Length: 220
Image (cartoon, rainbow, N blue to C red; front, side, top):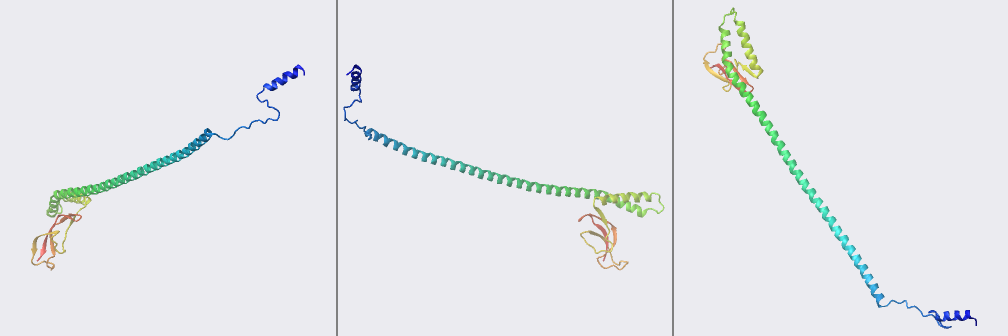
């Protein structure tokens, strides 16, 4: 045997895997020991806890969403109630303003009517005097035309304010618009009893309001 063969044989004998001829290599035990089994149980428990934790998280999230939706609904209901309240207030305000406007219009019209009536009562004596002057003046009096013009202008001014005169000759006597100053026992034209046979002074009215009743002579 040479030196190189002896060195190779010594190295093979000193190797850990060196086995005698016919000797089998020991099998590796792959079965899990107690520590391995405990690790597997712990892993399964952690997985189950993870699933349970995931379910609880979703439940909490769903409860939060429901609370948020309920809050939004409550806010909408509150807003709708406030809107209805403001609408009712606006409608009441509008109705009050409309009533106020109508009341002011009525009061203004009534004040205007009272003013016209007061003015007419101040002017009517002047008209009566002008009528007497026209009746008493001579037909050739040079002032007669001027008096007629003044009387006509005053009468037209009253007419523009709605005041008109009335002379109820030949009508039945009405105490609400006529004032009897005398009675005629024997009317010249044979008028029926209770008929106005003469107008002593014409009456004046504004619409349905009598400013001055007509002063008349009534057949007995």
